[in-house]
Image (tube, rainbow, N blue to C red; front, side, top):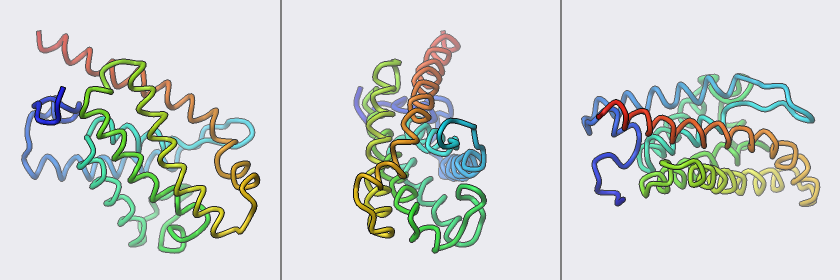
Length: 194
């Protein structure tokens, strides 16, 4: 599969249009989904998990790299301008520049990577979707951990313990959900087209 194929990502296969109005609707809908998922907290040990990273990476998988990046930039702009779209209703430049702001910037890179992989067919099988999600997660953690360390000045072992370790179990659960849902949606679409 090449990026020139018509059905390279799920959103394009479903909508079948490159019209600007459709793309704008996807960007607004995707950023709203991420904002809603940022407010949903699932109790897990030792740290509760939000569904925000699941939404971010699924937007990348289903929208593709470019539209995924535009959606995440719109989400960051909404939060920077004062809409309470970040986790726990957070908003404003202080959140973006604070200890967790690097993860927000990492969302853009994570969506870009998962979108790029989806455009190459990595969203069609459970195994490749899981791998795409794992790579996207790793990519979004990098700026998050770097900014957390820069803001707190903590040693790297503490930064890992605060900013990554407690979330790995939740990330594995989200990875499994996406790895089943996205290829499942492709399979359903294939059946409906017959």
